[in-house]
Amino acid sequence: MGILVVGSVAFDSVETPFGKADNVLGGSATYFSTAASYFSEVSLVAVVGEDFPNEHIDFLKSKGVDVNGLQKIPGKTFRWQGQYDYDLNEAHTLATHLNVFERFQPKIQEVYRKSPYVFLANIDPDIQWSVLDQVEKPKFAACDTMNFWIESKPDALKKLLSRVDLFVLNEGETREFAKEPNLIKAAKKILSYGPKTIIIKRGEYGALMFNGNSIFSAPAYPLELIFDPTGAGDSFAGGLMGYLANTDDTSESNIRQAIIFGSVMASFNVEDFSLDRMRTLTLKEIYKRYKEFKQLTHFEDIS
Ligand code: AMP
Image 1 (tube, rainbow, N blue to C red):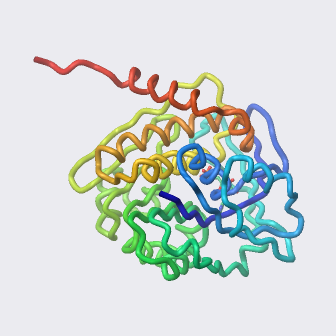
Image 2 (cartoon, helix red, strand yellow):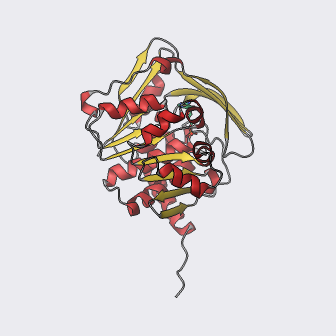
Image 3 (cartoon, rainbow, N blue to C red):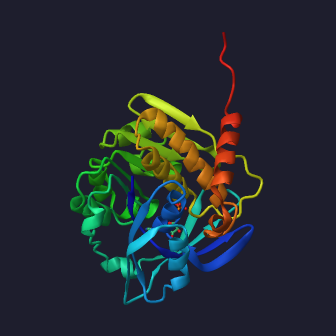
C-alpha cells in the first residue's frame, strides 16, 4: 500500500550545542519520505528551486522514493534556519524563507489520486487542504504542522483537522494551538476539532497517543549522543505511516506498534546532522532497535 506525501523539501541551516550545518538537505517531506521508504512505497509531491542539486534528488531515489511529483521551478528552494540550546526538545526558528513555496499550488497527478495513505507533512494548511480536495477519500489521512502555521493560519489548520484521521504535533504546539496548558485537556480539545487520533511528540520524553478515551504512552530511546534533532518529528511520522501502510492495518493496536517504529526512526535520525544517518541505516538496525524498545518498556503485571 503506497503513501502520498506533500510537504517541504528544503535547505536547512542548523546550529546545536554540538556543531552546525549550513544549507544541508532538509524539509518535512524529505525526512518523512526517507523514513517511510524503509517500510513502504512512498511518492513525494513538493517543489524546489533551480538551486536544488541533483545529488539530493539522487539520494531520495536511492532510497526508493518516487520523486516524479517533485517539481523544479524558477526561483530559490525553501530555506529554514534553526537553533537548539541544550534543551534539544525545542527548535528556535531564526528564519523561514518560503521562496518557491509562496507560489506552490500542488497538482496531484492522476496516478497518486487513489493513494490509500496520505500524509500532509508540515506545510501551509491551505496547501494541505488543496491536496485533500484533489485525492479520492484516502483510507487513512494524517497531517503534521508547526508553530509557524499555528500562529499564522490557526483557522485554516482547525478546518483541515475535520478531514484527517490522525494529527501529529509536538508538545509545545499542542498547548499553543489549544490555548490550554494541561496536555490532556489540550489533547481533548484538539480531538473535538475532528481527528480520530492525535499523537503528541515529546522529544526525549517520547510520544502520547490519544484515541477516543484511550491513551498510549511510548518512551523515547535513551540516547547518549544526539547531534541534531531536526527532522525527528518527520522521521517519526515517516516510520509510523510507513508501518501502517506496510501492514495495511489502522487499528489502535497497530497504531501503537507503528508509534514504536516511528520512535525508532526518530532516534536514528537525531544521531547525525541532516539526513546523514539515513544514508547508512539498515532495516536490520531498525528491527534490532524495535526489540530494544520492547525490552525498555517491559514489566510484569501484578497477580
Ligand atoms: P521537525 O521534524 O519538526 O524537526 O521538522 C524540521 C523540518 O521542517 C526542517 O527540515 C525544515 O526544513 C522544515 N520546516 C521548518 N519550518 C517549516 C515551515 N514553516 N513549513 C514547512 N516546513 C518547515
